Image 1 (cartoon, rainbow, N blue to C red):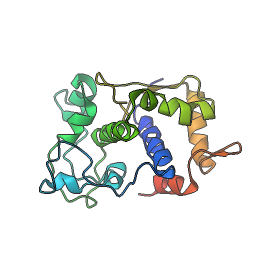
Image 2: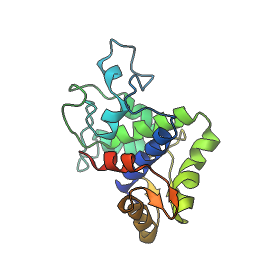
Image 3: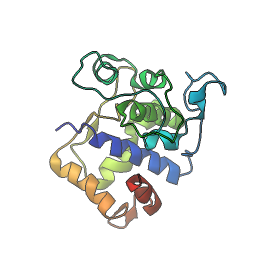
Image 4: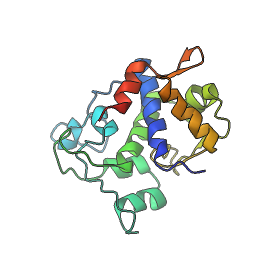
Length: 191
């Protein structure tokens, strides 16, 4: 079954693993190459803001209009991360919550850039999340340029989704292994 927005939690878990390993800092800004230096107000958006959906980007979720940004991004965009990065700025980061699939897809691209190697990037969810949890059916789909569509396109059985949910109920621990830090699980639950 398609995950739709459950994929956002898996993308967040990928960031959590990288943060726990010291490979990414959620307070980091100037995340997108499309944001032209410090004079671009979007350059002040931190990874934290993208994760908490308070980026200030104009990314309204309207599925009833086939011409809306989110529909165009998910069904007609070759590069979902660039699509998100090119959205206009509408409010100061951290001030307005706006549910956003676009910002999650930008996070997927940021993860890809941080990992730096496409083979490692494409193996990352399987190696770090799916295999340790026994999620044998899980597949993360990529857009045409190779970014995970981390907002919406994971496919798995309901039992495998339940395994992922159980990881959070167990504060990031699976068996004897701490896959996600307790701090990341708490952060993920915070508004």
